[in-house]
Image (cartoon, rainbow over all chains, first blue to last red; front, side, top):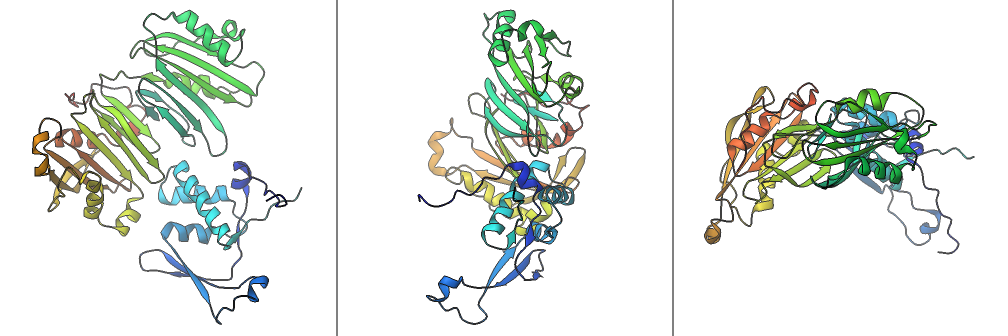
Length: 123
Length: 305
């Protein structure tokens, strides 16, 4: 608690200007209803390997709906979050605010799950 | 177009309300684009014995500075405004402030515009579009992409503005007439998750303690805007054990659900009066045309008792 470093809080401008990229090597498998399934191989952390041994081929599967697939496919390391929001609003005829709020939450969830990373400039 | 609690304002399409508080008598709203706050709006019912000039001077002093009152200019706007005064920050970035005292509803309103550099957006494009509608007239509502008009006498009771799922509930002052309107979008995704009949079932779940779920939903033609769509209609009778509350709780609730394929939105209306529901649904989307706003009285939406 006393020695943990506080992570810098991103401003909304920085969050929208960020260009996320996929950090897992996995392909999205399309589903009939328009969604998709993403299967990611599990890799335990070096410290955890001493405690837990995962069976070979262990994987975790994430299910996306149609909008989630659209956002996932838009993540390429070159497209900013703001551009993704505008593409989503245009594609599904959504209000910008209606597209922005869930997209940012979705991005945050993808980052927390370790599927997406955001390179930050070090000043 | 932004229309809330009787106030109407034309704003750029990239601006949206991000915080709303209060009711018809007093409230606040913050409007922002994707990154920055643009407008701060505050309204309240004015004191009948209040003096406009003294009130205006106090507001400018509280919000800007004591000299702002002298630097503000009167602005001529359409409508009946007892006070309409604009202060423009001479050295932006800063805040422009417009205050108005509406004779139509007896309310006062303050709008703060966060200006980065001197440009005429606020004074030229936004301010001239402001209008006020008293509560005893047909009232336009427009938030995000959900716009409609309610009959006179209905007041907003609660709302849920979630991304893709907007709900607003209205009732008369005595609570005898209640209307709930819900818009879900995109409709193609909503219908792919569950059928329209299932959406109606989840809507009635909220009142299941007082009303029996409908046995079946019947197809019906529903006019939304200028177009007729085939939707579903369901009746929910009051539960028998509540027969003693005959004068307190309506004997039935009507549910109407329709997919507006033109706007790709699913609309659900719930209320005691089918006629009122259909009239409100017929006005959905019409307010998105700015020229339609302010023509209260042309369409015949009957006043609700």
